[in-house]
Amino acid sequence: MDYQEKNKDEEEPKRSSLFVSVIAVLILLIAIFGISFATITFTQNGEESNTIRTGELRMSYTEDTNGIKIENALPTSDDVGKKLSGANEYFDFTVKTTIRGNATIAYEVSAEKDVNSTLQDDQVKLYLEKKVGAVYQEEMKPTLFTPLASKTEWGTEKGTMLLAKGTSTKSENIPYRLRMWIKQDTVVNGSYSYTVRVNIKGGVVVD
Image (tube, rainbow, N blue to C red):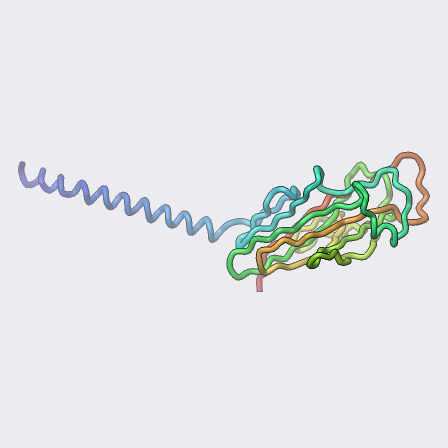
């Protein structure tokens, strides 16, 4: 074996080692880039995650559908409406936050009216409670459906009703309960309905 062939054989392992090192560095750079530039995305499906750069915001619910519906119900006083507890008379959902590192997540809970609703907004009241410990407490008093005039900072859409705002600095579950009824003294005739869907929007609070 001459000198050139011997030198070539010695260079082959070095080249292979260098190639493996370059690949390892590229994988590391891709991983860092992916973490640093994760995007903020949101959906209106409570069973899917809303990805945030430093955490996760999720809404979950146990019913088959996300929301609550009035159908041919009788007008009700606020005192009675706040205590409705029958089937389809209230809607439970939970805001879930998963936070990585030192961050604060702000979120908004809103109600989106179904386009097929036949009652008027000023005929329907919504009432929201938040569970604190083992007890539900009033979060929003009985209020007529009031659509937003413009989109909010966190992305709650124009035309939906803002029900609650909140912040979280830790991973936690925040249960809510929504009730809805026809305002007392409303005159209703024939067949009618009113349906809302619950949405959650949010993002990371930047100091």
